[in-house]
Amino acid sequence: MLSTCEKAPVMVDKRDVMALGFTESYSASIIRKAKALMVSKGYGFYSSRKVGRVPASAVGEILGIDLAGARDAEDSERL
Image: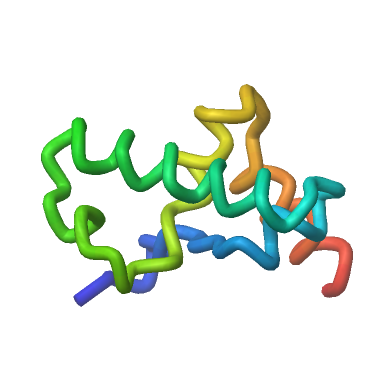
């Protein structure tokens, strides 16, 4: 269980990547690459075909941008 100081990792799926402006097929490809990255880091859970959500940090690593930081900034603007 997470303590009050820790945040749960931001998870993204194909639709979230599409919202960044990528096509449906390219978004799916990015998610597949992020899943492969997570498996290579030792998270075997992501090797399942049914898993469609990955940590934003993995997608950010693939794309070379900070998705989690962007989401945090977006959340703080709403407050």
